[in-house]
Length: 144
Image (cartoon, rainbow, N blue to C red; front, side, top):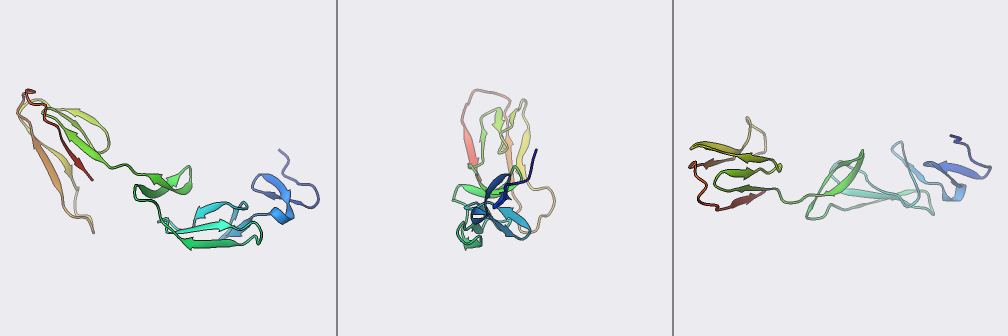
């Protein structure tokens, strides 16, 4: 693959563009003209490479109400963050991480709990008691 450009052109990402359309460099990273990106790990500062000035312009911003900041394919982005729901019937549970479990017998099970002390997190435990019979198909759900 040839990575050289004709005279008067420069490599912008993987494309040769006229020098007047060259992108921007910020904190050692190259950005194409009009490319937007999150400048921090919590998605509170969004930046764009201005095509006319080849300068980075940043502003305060945030992810939407049903989104969380994370990495997708190595790029920081706002990702859809659906409500996490746990559903329980008389002998069947779908957990917050969408795993299915069947319970038989007459036991008490812990559905949710913290392992050890975690600074800044409240202690929480959710237990269910099974009666060993599937006569009632009452569905109970929790959202977090």
